[in-house]
Image 1 (spheres, rainbow, N blue to C red):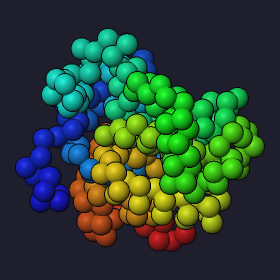
Image 2 (tube, helix red, strand yellow; image 1 turned 180 degrees about the vertical axis):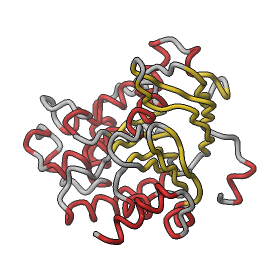
Image 3 (cartoon, one colour; image 1 turned 45 degrees about the horizontal axis):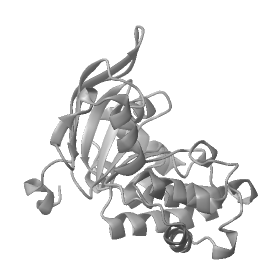
Image 4 (cartoon, rainbow, N blue to C red; image 1 turned 120 degrees about the vertical axis):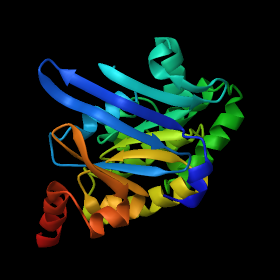
Length: 263
């Protein structure tokens, strides 16, 4: 762990978290802390429970057991289960972001690119149209979308542009924590490389904490400080990203890494 994080207050504290679907385990016995500015990647094969865990951490799904405590700006570490639905929605709109695998699920497709960004600004109290438009233009520039596309609907954008617009929509309010669910999965390889470079620079520039789900170990190595490996709903290995990928200890992690090397 980065030495500076050892003395920081955790942004997120997860203890014995579990989510089940009847008798089927989504995830269970999940324990970790996430620190400000840290990128944590969750990897595993399809069905390992990584997306269930992500959605449970973000309280898109309610956990069946355990706790998720978040360092709220006005209250400090707070069990998210004690928040009302309205308070959770406020958190999602302001201090959190959620980047979906399919950008169409994270954007309003029938309104303009500028309106997609502006909605988040209005959620934190901005009302001046000129200021909102100027900020939206600045963020289009940050995510490498031409300013002339401000009034275009996302339906007119390519998949890569839609994903970059989704990033702008989520980051414009300067959230402290962003959840990302396979954000590169639907992108062509050439588009993916450019998108990852952009994402890495924005995360570093803004000091974001990120919880990222991916099946792509190359994405994990490029973006993440720390790695969680999941199998059948449980964490089987965790550690610094390079350490886990270069010297995997668990047989399942060894299999994951070797399968990439053999590809």
